[in-house]
Image (cartoon, rainbow, N blue to C red; front, side, top):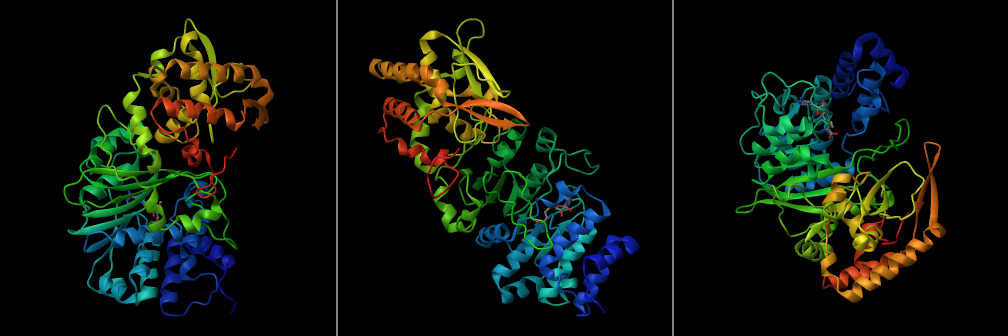
Length: 507
Ligand SMILES: C[S@@+](CC[C@H](N)C(=O)[O-])C[C@H]1O[C@@H](n2cnc3c(N)ncnc32)[C@H](O)[C@@H]1O
């Protein structure tokens, strides 16, 4: 008989449905009675997704993207290994990427011990995924795992569902807006304010375990609606890494071959590691890590990533509502900037009088301030009085405005509220520094048209300015000096780069 392939699979799903089809694949595999090169343990997760798409149960585009790739699962497992907790729980285990990575990492002997002693707990709302996960473990570690591994088919947010005592959790929770609050959920501020499943899962996991490693979208780091989650996190401690999604992206671990490679932009991800060390509160936050796909392998190791995490534990409060994502080498400069700034940009904006400054909203590698009315869709127009115009003009063409966006956002657009909040330090500049800024600004304004660049967006040409980098360096140098720092502008290299290692400036 021909080996079992995708055609057999689709016809089985059409005839018997996904659940029966998988039950048959799994039980035959366990008895060694399944002949297929494709339907092997390593491929189960993706084959299940293909099956779901075939049944049209979930929008394929939404569904497939956020399973945890092998290298990320391994990194998360390494972090989990170093944490306290006797029982190992995978919440939202799906077909088992995370728990299987963890068991592989601890080695056969320890994995068998954990399973046999009943220390493995799996939670998912999807019965078929949960079954695939359980059988995958059994295929690796023997069929009596089916009885020893705790499989909890559930809505994890239901209050009747509890983690065991003494547990540590690894999780990639679902990323959906909450459409219905479950009857038996604990309705907390986090649930109500965020209206997101992932943050609600984080809250429940963190409040009921000793330690955890959780991968989620990065939006909770700064968005207003997750402020209550950040306040909740003040009571715990650990570290959080955030990853950009251009050019490389964390959820791009799809294999090739029969499986489509997912090239589309996906979510910017954070990995939160809750350590709960004694007498310590808050989280150490990484910068928004931007990497090229070819740097991925070098990047995804705990030892390598260590260099990006600052030693400072951040706590939020009503004056500092968001975490900031700072490269450790820029920490002192950041502190100084915050300390000496006596105004925010919103204080000097004036809608009735003043000169217009045009700020393109998208800022991938730098920000721009223009005195010419740029022909483009996405731009903000602010009006600034003459006395401070050149300073603000330079500010937007320096690294500072761009860095602020990377610290507190780093997504796609520079929001107006973030622009208004930028701390400025005009009064730190002495008269010779002000003269220098005026000179640079006037020269740049005269020459703007020489540096116009055009990009097509949805068929429409978008005007922008790409000034030579020397201008940015000249401005940075004056600003650094005004803040009492050496005028070595290379400290900003990493924030403008698409590469972690190259340090070059990218468009
Ligand atoms: C992003 S996937 C992660 C899958 C897998 N752990 C991984 O890392 O590749 C989220 C998982 O959460 C499950 N899930 C969704 N809502 C749930 C709920 N209310 N309770 C428990 N699990 C849920 C989904 O079925 C899915 O398997």
